[in-house]
Length: 299
Image 1 (cartoon, rainbow, N blue to C red):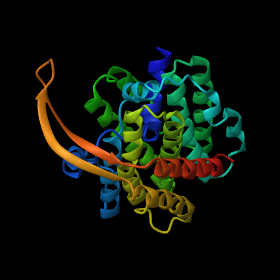
Image 2: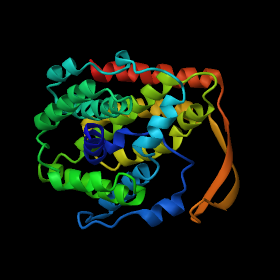
Image 3: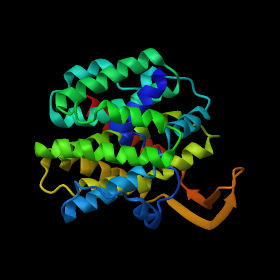
Image 4: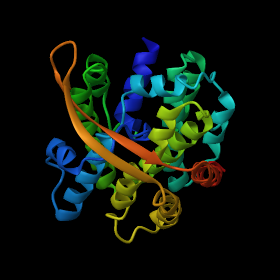
């Protein structure tokens, strides 16, 4: 029960930190899934909403994440996470937001490996930073309850997540701090990719594929952050992300033929084959760049 509650909390507030994208980006299908919200009032907010939803809809469920990481056969490794004691030293909003996203990813990782005590520690760290940012009341217990009741229903879960995000974004908007939510997403993305690279083994082709596919999520993340004009707090982070994007630009993902089939329950499943062209050198370059960024953000 603890694990479910933790993952529900993670999904509602820190879902953007689970960023190992599933399959290639499909702009048409994702745009059809964009949920209309009353909080989107102007063109920039509409663009932002579309980018956020595209990121959300390429995020695998916690169960999928656990399966991919555990395929590597690696045991839980606390040293890969940002020390919870560091939470006390983040006193600037930028650092608090980035590390809120990072601790969210770490919380998910600990939960996946059934590390209940560590999960409690990371839950406390995320709650502390949320309180420091003044957003601890942005999402109420009813959201957590809905999460718990829909953990196995991906579409319902993503709709709840989307609503929760805009609740948080609206809360920040009142204070003129909408860009803080973008920093949380960025921090989670960095930590999620760090954890993926840390678990990669030569025989884990699935995880390597997911890492390569980060080029899609990264493109949308950068576009999202650029919708916030004249926000100096985002400038250096955007530059960091663009330096990673330069590496991903050299990674090729070749789309194959779309295939349609039915699963055991008779539900139609649409999928497709694709090939990844990513050298060991490119992979190492991504891992090194992310490691350096992460070190800067967690100091």
